[in-house]
Length: 119
Image (cartoon, rainbow, N blue to C red; front, side, top):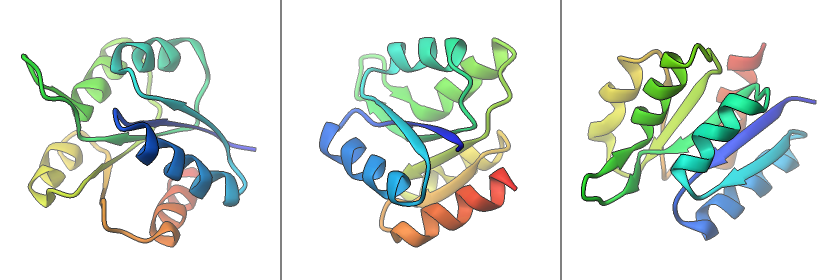
């Protein structure tokens, strides 16, 4: 069973995403604190990270793709799926080799992308 970490500063969104991935047969952890998320990525062998884009309004603002950068700097190659209702962030995620899903996407879209990444 693949292990997924869902990162979102809004706990109700994180819980909903957790349910989506659990129904898809994944083992899921949730983290609402970006700093704790970095620690979890470093200490737990996740197969996939699903991360909101705007994690903190700041100052300074913290974006999910900054967590991806930190994970890469620490040598972790876990794949990321970035999410946001603002499609303008797509290029930030994709330029880092991550996938991007519009927050309005269906549960099926999240699961299909996860399956594709984890094949």
